[in-house]
Each structure stands twice: as structure tokens, then as C-alpha cells.
Image (cartoon, rainbow, N blue to C red; front, side, top):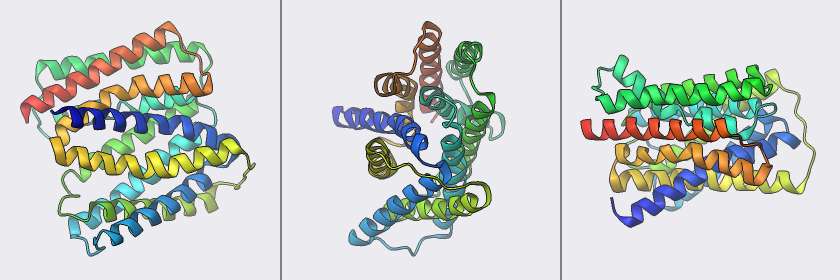
Length: 289
């Protein structure tokens, strides 16, 4: 792995992790489903527009259309929709930690259900992940965490895991930015329906809301996705996924710096253990591949 890929991987992990802090700011002043559907409308139209300018087309393969719909619903609508709703009562750092367990869940599912071999290092990583989550949740429960919000974050992580497993390799064949843009528009449509059914839209205009919304649309929403595809094309999906082990660190650190969220000793220990678990699972899968 060359130095350029390492720097890009660090940038991706930082952008991905920062999304939870910006989301927490957004849901303070706006209803979550409405705000997220608006974000996907803007990011999706930008993505499709840039893709068309690059000569890409929406004449996708059947596999790409399937990936577009599945990811648009499970990742963009269910995963992020539930996280946005949860972060009305759950801290951004905790939401980031729960979402960061996705690589562990993918490794567990491929081992149990898809027959992928997992070496002792990978098994140790899964065990470490469980221990790390237990350490953090023990501290947060004692501190009065909203269990319904935690449940929503957990279901969201499962939805993202399912989407990842269902469309593995289905986005190959070019037009990747068009696929990303269309996925966001699918998420926009799905969340707009959910907004009408389950939410009373509200908005309290403020500079923090505007800044967080613009940042979320452009950086985690669009730029991070482009960076991720570049990284995958450069070093491969398995190696690129190794950078996910940084997400718990960055997610907690950004929330602590920008939102002044409390950071205790158990949180730090739990984050270190989870990060080790994610790295161990990814390294084990990388060697198997």
C-alpha cells in the first residue's frame, strides 16, 4: 500500500466518522427524516449531474440497478434514517461506535452464513469487538443512555451489513458516480414517504444547522463516496476496508472536540478494543483473500 493510498484512506475514515457529529447538529434544529431526505436530494442531483458531465450514463446493468435500489433503501434510508432519528437522544460518539461495528458484523455473517473461512486472528477480532462494545455500553447504560435510540442505531448497523452482503461486487461495470447519485435519490424518495407517514416536519434556522447541512451534503454525502471508490480501485475492497478500524477513534474524538461530549476511561478502552477487533477481522479476511 503506497503513501498516497494511506493518506486517502485516512481522509476517508475522517470524513466518514465526522458525519455523526454533523448529523447530531442537524437534528437539534430540524426534524431528522425531512433533513436527511433533503440532503439526499441535493447530494443525489449533484452526483448525477457530475456523472453526466463525466460522460457516464444511467443505462445501468441489472446488477447495478439492483445495487442502486438495495443500497438506496437499506443504507441511505434505513441505516442513516434510523441513525438520524436516534441521534435526537443518543450522543454522536455512541452512534459512531455502533455504526463502526459494521465490518465486524460483515465478517461474522460471511463466516457463519456464506462459508468464508475466518482464521484465529479474525475470530479473536470478533471476540474483541463484542468485549469492546460491552465495555462502552456498560458505561453508557450506567450514565442513563436512551436504550430505544441505541436499538435504532443497532438495527441501522444490521441494515447496512445486509446491504453490503447483498450487493457485493454488483457496482462493478463503470458509471460508479451515477450509481451513487441514483442511490441517494432512491434514499430521498424512500425517506420522503417516511417523513409524510411518521414525522411532523420542523426547522429552526441557525448558522450551525446551515453549516452542518452543507458539510453533510458535500463531504460525507458525496466526496467521501468518491474517495472510497478511488481507494477501492487503487488497493482493492478488502485492503480499503481496513481503514474502518479508525472510525471508532475519529468518531469519538470529533464528537468530543466539537460537541464537548463526555469521554471516560471505559469509552477509551472500549474504542481501542473495538478498533483492534475491526483491524484483526479485516487483516484475517485480507490474508484469506
